[in-house]
Length: 236
View (tube, rainbow, N blue to C red):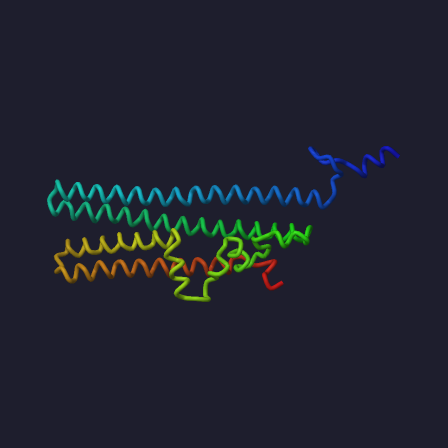
């Protein structure tokens, strides 16, 4: 009798009640939830670290060019400008690429958290009214969790463009496009182009880089949506 009771009422480590299947499931889900939260935190740390590195390189290049312009000859300034701006442009593009990858990873972690939240609600459906985040793992559900449900891409073109420029990758894209335009303008000066053509070349470099980054970001988001199959869509 005592042995049967002990088998039927085993206690979890550190707990005071019997280990039920629901309790074990909740414990496993909670552990995974906290793991995803910690991973997102590490991603944000690298996210801002990469951005700070780019701005440090950019400010260093500007200061170096200012000193060279005061102390060096015009030919020296042109050579230094082309070299430093090229390095800054490379760091900027690499930063945008890495931040895009981190955004993809963050999107993936939020997808996992939404699925876990869906499991919570399956275990305790009466708690649904207390959640302001979503338990669905489609794009609408993920953007709801991120607080961007009103900005689902594709609904309003101008709103999408405006929101894109307010994000850190969008802001970096503009700054990198300015660096690209400056590099093209300096190259035009080195080739002996007249001033109107130098200005036109700089503007063209800026616009081409900016549009290229915008297309790249749009394709990245489209590939992101295709790469994750929703198991708990919002319409279900």
